[in-house]
Length: 304
Ligand code: CP
Image 1 (cartoon, rainbow, N blue to C red):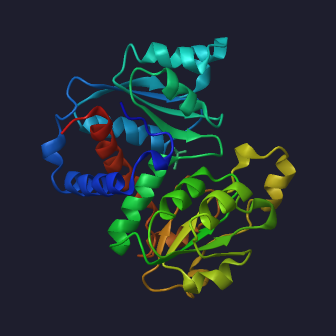
Image 2: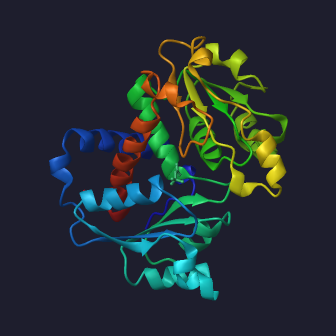
């Protein structure tokens, strides 16, 4: 039985096959409408979500399966003090596969150790978000035609942004990726990411606090929100939240074929005027998230 807790649980070849499968699902949706008939997905969300939970649910429904679950910890017996392990052993009696989001880093890993069915990490604290990374990779592949030979800028909250950590990890296994890490001093990429991923795999990178200086060099710009829920002091969040706002005047200095990604939700960091620019890919990224989660469910359930 295979779980997906960290993006490295999938080999590069497995990710390539998921991307191929997603492209086939996009082309031939009708071929997949009954693939998971009789199967159930449990969506256990101990933390808020719009895209991840609903895309998992839509993915399973479009595969002909059904969905159970909860969207907040308070509506489950976690509110009475039940452990993650007991919750997972229970839900494994009702569902064939579980997608789980939890504010505690490592909770999905603990869950996978007790589970009788595949566990998918749908985001754990400020740690990892591997299925968002799959959506990001599918989007980059569809937009640029490749996952290598790219200069990728990550902008915003690189400290707490779990999608940033997972995507850099995935890109570290591709060839010739250059990183430009754009953040305020307080929200720089964590030291463990630098040492254990970026430097370990020899990725060329630079750090800057200037989006204006970085933008002309980028093939992909990955904007992120400042993660309010991870701050200890509200005053720090207020001070940092509008550090970067991408607008059309900044975009005027970017390449004509730049791809702008954002895992969403957006707060203020991309002006809505950018949405109509052909370089804006973030709503395509949302849709790609559903297709690649369909491909992932098929893989983890062993459905051909
Ligand atoms: N990208 C993402 O994880 O969005 P949600 O928090 O809405 O699921």
